Length: 135
Image (cartoon, rainbow, N blue to C red; front, side, top):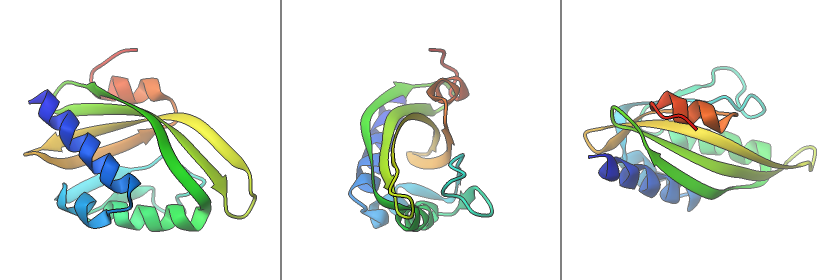
């Protein structure tokens, strides 16, 4: 089942990257939950819920970043339906114009073939550990 979970995560990330937010919503459970650690983006609550959580998050990202993308993605099978993705966030701040290039990690839980839980980490090792892996 793990390779299937990696496929689910990969396809959802690729859809998010294309800004195909309907495909991302279709790949997410109704009770999907995303906890973000990107305080530069998150205003009040860093938790986004529901099938359209990543659509809401994308809108906030678009307000914050003039341009942004996720590069150099690596996927790791974890335990208990977990998948970690380590990637590089590249962007330019809308207000500051500052260029950011940072390696990050995201831990996913897949349930019944759909995204169920997602949490981002500034330290990629933490994402690996969150799905039962070590560096």
